[in-house]
Length: 100
Image (cartoon, rainbow, N blue to C red; front, side, top):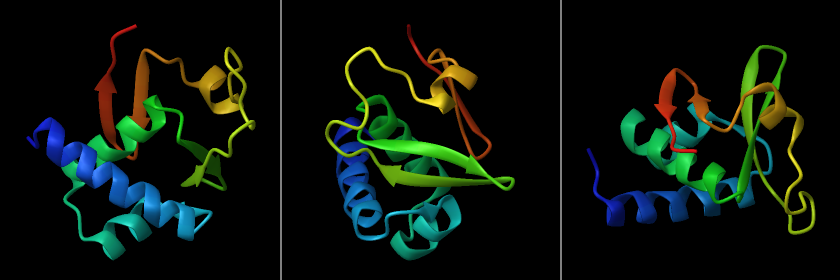
């Protein structure tokens, strides 16, 4: 399992990629950045928890987009967050129990 520094480095790389490709899939990110499933899942989880990216479901597929400043105010939830409670985050088959 990657350490905190590796996760931070990977999340910065993933964030930069998503900023350049406004709506991209897990597979696209993994293929382009050549990250292992574990590294990518942990990077995405960190970015979601930091509210830097959002995960969207459309037509049976999952996409990631950057959250623009002001898109989600403090205390507001996205539709996906209401549907998928904060204590359980699912990222393309990688399931993490988070502390609430």
